[in-house]
Length: 208
Image 1: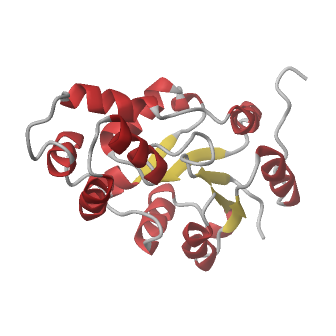
Image 2: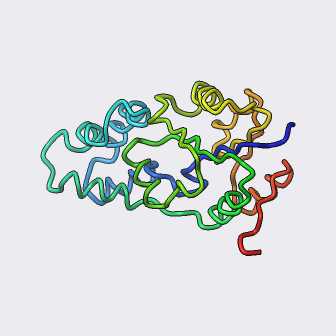
């Protein structure tokens, strides 16, 4: 393993809560009195285009919820979606410490729809940590498709042996590992800190 120069981060389930996962969709179905099975099926059919930026949030909602008249507005539904996001404060501490060292190129490598990704970047000031956002909605490919990892390495011109990829889903780590990147399965901020140290990455404690 070479000296690590770049760290690529999943966002949902690592730095933040998942943006629009199955539990959030189930809660939306309850909150807005949707047929949960129908809604989930419509989501699955639209998911790939939605997360790769081929359709907008508005089109996604037209396909999944607003294909008929509803007693609620699209803005009410959008606000519900956006309100599901939370920060993993313990992970953010590690991330802020790494940012403070100025030793590493930090970027996201995540699956997200364009509007939700933009909202989460602004809401949680992710630009204070990340120099670039290699998100499925911008690259038109999503994990675990090998293409998104290849594009990320090509755009950054980082040798894979100098890169770490952090994700909470084992299936998303496999293509990165196959390309020669060091991978870390995220379980907790404490385990992440220990795994980074094993790879020679030691965050500087902020203020100390």
